[in-house]
Image (cartoon, rainbow, N blue to C red; front, side):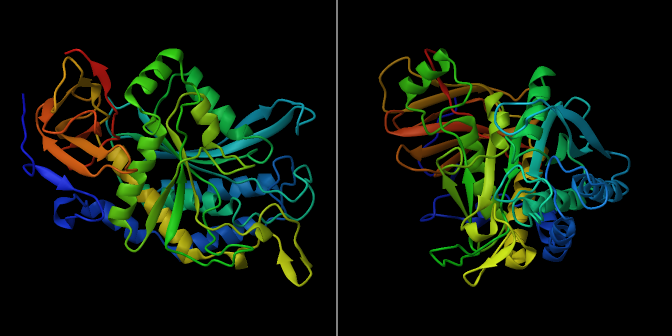
Length: 448
């Protein structure tokens, strides 16, 4: 049993007591962050916005959705040449079935996907970075009108393209999918197709980082301009929660510790570790009011997924026809974007994704002992099923705190801490040989 006294083997990560020297910052991941280019992102967005429309149901091969899909595919294929054969790309066709809301008859559609194959043949994990490439006007079914979709969601698609460029030449033990979805505006059609396929084929999806509306730094109405913050939305109670899961959640008070919420905390910690002068704000909602995103399709299938979005939205430039009205320019045009801000959000993505894909899988069977009354807390776990861990962090925070505040390192698979389980929340994450941390696992009660 590994017993630890206060201050020994301890890393503080709160804003009030923080030691930069004690936090692992991988130089290769830092280099990837530095390679993310605002100029490249701008070129992708402007090209995507140059097509007349990227409406899901538009079939114009020159200036519609097919032309945009071919453009994204061409970018993926050009980056694949630097991958030593590990990256491949395709347009994956599927049929959107008619529904009672927006799709009146079966319609052809396609996602564009680049796959960067993991280097470890024993690692089946898949990590997904996504954005949706379809655009829309005020009338969601207007498939002919001009709809540049620069920010919604040319920005997210551009981030996906840029991460493919930066990461194609690198090696990761796990596989990464770079996905440009279609059909988001008509009801998450492309994401639903892929998420359902992944569930049916039992993919081992480690995390989904969905990027939707990430390239603007000024708001409408309130006139706020701030390029120093971004938002991460995460669900609290899992969409696929069972009665047994609900019972354990109520018993442990884990309403704020879903897998998606752990991923959101992870993105905040890793993103702020690597991207200077930038804050990742945790939003404790699955998404915004009256809106939705492709992460929901994965959450419904039990996968760990979050939505990444800009801090301040400008509704003059979302879901609006291009026009000037009362002296105001409406429409989702590239000139209203902040490409340096888009670079920062994309950099948070690359740091988080690279760390996740480099780390071992999460520790297994993470438990907290409730065998008897005690003012100490004992956690127990098994080694990760995938990858090799050189050690583990036991994480701790106040029950009222949004973020993990202390990290205790050990090379064993159990630890007793001089803190009451009644007063704190705990979790465990695996640490790879290169220092990359897995997602944290919230413990279940045990009589051990």
